[in-house]
Amino acid sequence: MPTLILVRHGRSTANTAGVLAGRTPGVALDERGTEQAAALPGRLAALPLAAAVSSPLQRCRDTLRPLLDARPDLPLHTEERISECDYGDWAGRKLAELADEPLMTVVQQHPSAAAFPGGESMRAMQARAVDAVREWNARIEAEHGENAAYVMCSHGDIIKSLVADALGMHLDLFQRVHADPCSVTAIRYTRLRPFLLRLGDTGDLAPLAPREPAPGEGSAAGSAADAAVGGGAGAP
Image 1 (tube, rainbow, N blue to C red):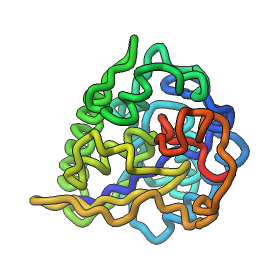
Image 2: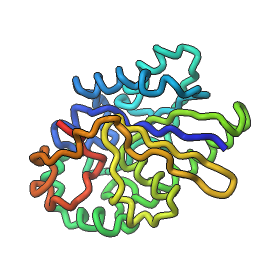
Image 3: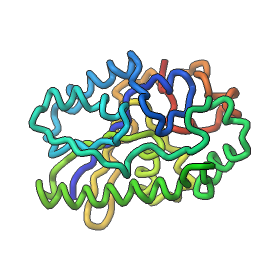
């Protein structure tokens, strides 16, 4: 079966503002995110990609645009099921403010039980994303062969949930996974099991250095041990 190249969108204006964007329209890449997207064609240059699949949200489409410009023959498909989690009433709010919501503890510690008011549950988010990948795997294999690779641009929580599925991890453990903006996660699927080949690869070790919490992170978000809902802004 094919190899899936998962790309989280580049850093967005919402990431740097410490806002949970969700499906809020018009959230664009910031200056750094634009630079990250511009570097993507070079990072993926060695890969013979069969197709590109994108979340419908602008920040994902903008992330893939330089790759599509560099490879005009690469077909682009939009897939609603890999869109950002529907955070409902949480969308557009500051992460630091959301840290005080009782639901945040559930999101962090028992996400399989978390359902966002006016939105969807994290179980439903994972289920639709996994279904989409399974169907795209079958389609890419049928059209391009079992050794094909394709790129899919999506969002932090979506990618983390797909990694959890690939590793056979319960959704309650998915907050242990992290994916920086414009990071590459690669999963090779086979008939019997998937193999995680790369996780959150940016080719940059700077995010590993100790740093002061960004807006909405660390103690401002409740605990330095908390996962960044939506994925976080990455290194400054």
